Image (cartoon, rainbow, N blue to C red; front, top):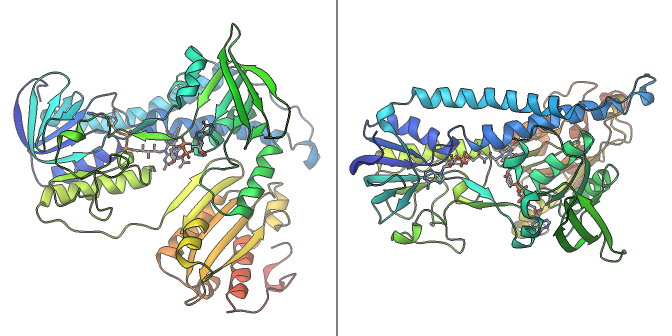
Amino acid sequence: MKNNQNTHVEVAIIGTGTAGMGAYREVRKHTDSIALIEGGQYGTTCARVGCMPSKLLIAPGELRHNTEKFADFGLQGKIPSVDGKAVMKRVKDERDRFVGFVNEDIDSFDEKHRIQAYASFVDDHTLSLSTGGTLTADKIIIATGSRPNIPGFFEQAKDRLITNDDVFYWDDLPKSIAVFGAGVIGLELGQALHRLGVHTHLFGVGDAVGPLSDPEVIATSLEIFKGEFPFHSNGQVKSIERNDKGVQITFKPTPDSEEVTETFDYLLAATGRKTNIDNIGIENTSLELDGRGVPIYNPMSMQCGNSHVFIAGDVNGDIPLLHEAADEGRLAGENASTFPQVFKKARKTSLGVVFSDPQIATVGMSFRALTKKLGCHFASGSVSFTGQGRSRVMLVNKGLLKVYGDKETGVLLGAEMIGPHNEHIAHLLAWVIQLRMTVSEVLQMPFYHPVIEEGLRSALRDLLFNLDMGAHPPLRCIDCGPGA
Ligand SMILES: Cc1cc2nc3c(=O)[nH]c(=O)nc-3n(C[C@H](O)[C@H](O)[C@H](O)COP(=O)(O)OP(=O)(O)OC[C@H]3O[C@@H](n4cnc5c(N)ncnc54)[C@H](O)[C@@H]3O)c2cc1C
Ligand SMILES: NC(=O)c1ccc[n+]([C@@H]2O[C@H](COP(=O)([O-])OP(=O)(O)OC[C@H]3O[C@@H](n4cnc5c(N)ncnc54)[C@H](O)[C@@H]3O)[C@@H](O)[C@H]2O)c1
């Protein structure tokens, strides 16, 4: 489609990331009158600067870290030195391969549907394009994603202030870095860089760790990460200054400690993300906005009010995860196509994984949400991975898993955890929670021996006991095999 024409389409989709592409595929089934608009680079946040390159950086760090355990296993060998240029080359080559697949998909979309321009609302049905001209549409899907949120204070770091977007374009690893934000990005990238030999300090606030809300799991996580690298989870930063060597940061590691001054090559801001709703002229529409400036929408249909506008992916700021963006895009696409007939769909069980080591995961309802909603009407069960058989065998025996169940029905409601390879346990739990299984029913499922999932069984047995629905778990469980 030519960028400058004044034209009308049935459905306009703003943003060609994961949500926008999912929406396009659905809309395409219903009409040929589509505008799929992209202002920035094709390739999606996930593939270019998100999920995939971050995991590519984590992988060599984790491999190298495991060589630190050689002596404990009776093996001889040095911890490998790091060739930063080669590490970054692989990260970028593999990243480009993933981006290439996305771009192949885009190329397969009908060229007449694609517009390369930033779009902005002029009114409810009209979009202006940064390349000139306007576009009118019967129905519009907003899928403009998010961008890093950078507190003004960090601007003092000047040219040494970076975000995740910059990291994945590095040609070499720096010598040192101060990572701000102990959320998902800060933990993943901070630990990976530390493990690749970059002198790393991680600065958090209020002892927050990733998406966790259970105080016991938070405490275990803080102990684990602080045992590995400098992590100021409740530090106080006094000043940030660009000096001739890099970024000089003066801080108190804890509120009671002495001030420390250190200079780092870069300051990486990993302090949350802002939705791209504030720069698309949303105020020019008649949509009702919430306190964040996001149109009020139904998360089961993605429809904004009763209007012809739908919103999907990170831009709505609710569950900024890849699989959710994909689901939301498809749902928005289906409903925009059939509007004014709009159907609701049940959303999947909530599932989040942080690819730190040990991995953090949250499933179903969080401890915080349960405490708010059910008060004392839910119970917890837990297992520590310290003595868990398979985890000890592999020397990955760190972490704590908590599961939560309903005291009235015995239904499993949620879990929070930090532990070895917990991405797998988190999936099993998400599936059984979505099936609304009771704790007793889950315990009827087979558990192999010796596996890390036996730890999950211990936590579930503890939960059953705490729900007053089962006997106290035996200290050494005979059907489990040693160390379960
Ligand atoms: C470092 C990092 C690691 C991550 N790791 C994971 C992970 O491991 N697992 C996971 O589930 N999630 C992860 N995520 C989150 C995941 O990447 C996002 O949830 C997902 O990519 C959001 O997709 P989206 O379609 O909403 O947005 P995007 O893919 O960002 O697409 C939005 C598009 O809209 C375009 N756009 C913006 N404004 C306009 C406009 N006005 N006009 C036209 N186009 C516009 C943008 O250029 C962009 O291409 C990670 C994110 C980051 C940053
Ligand atoms: N594995 C994954 O699924 C994955 C990986 C990376 C990112 N993501 C997605 O991207 C989103 C954004 O990630 P994120 O890590 O930027 O956000 P986040 O919301 O997870 O964490 C931001 C953290 O920064 C802290 N913070 C805020 N201001 C600060 C300051 N001035 N100094 C120090 N700390 C400060 C907050 O307390 C919070 O802990 C995540 O919510 C997640 O949905 C997912």
